[in-house]
Image 1 (cartoon, rainbow, N blue to C red):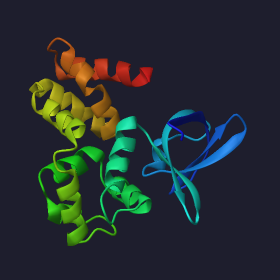
Image 2 (image 1 turned 180 degrees about the horizontal axis):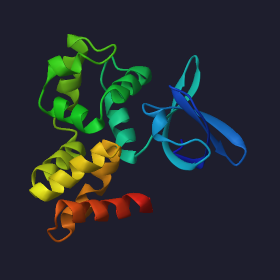
Image 3 (image 1 turned 90 degrees about the vertical axis):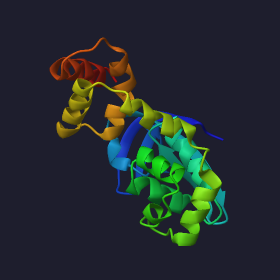
Length: 192
C-alpha cells in the first residue's frame, strides 16, 4: 500500500524507528534502525504486512533493500521477522553474494535459519539477485588508489552502504590518487 514514508525520525529503538509524518508517528520495524538519526528528516521505504495479529510496517534505507526483503519473504519458511533478522545480521551485498554462490553453511548462521531453510533460500533466490551481484562485480574493476580510498572511508567511520552508494560515481571520475578520491568522496557523502 505504501511505497515510502518521508518525515522526521522521532525515536530510535534497537528494533524500530518512529517516523513523524505530519504529526502522525509511524512505528516502523527496521533491520538497521541506527542508520537513521533522531530529529532528522528521513525517507524510509516501507512494506506493510497484514497478519491476524495486526498490521506492521517494515522499513528500509533503500528500495533495493526493500526488494531483497520481499524476495526473502517469497521463500517458504521465511516470515517478515526472520527476513528482517537476516538483513540486520549482514550487509545486503554479502547476503546476496552468499545466496548467488549457494553458500548454505554461511546462511545457517542467521537467526532462525537452519540447513533446510538455507537450502530453500538458495534454491528460490539463486539467480534472482542480479542487482546486488552487479554491485559486487563493479568493485573488482576499481583502481588500486580508489580501493585504498574506499577502505580509508570505512576506517573513517562511514558505513559500507554509504561507501557503496558513492563508489560508482567515484569510479567514473578520471584516475586520481587515494587522497584525491577521498576528497571527492567526502564531497559526495556530505551532499546527501
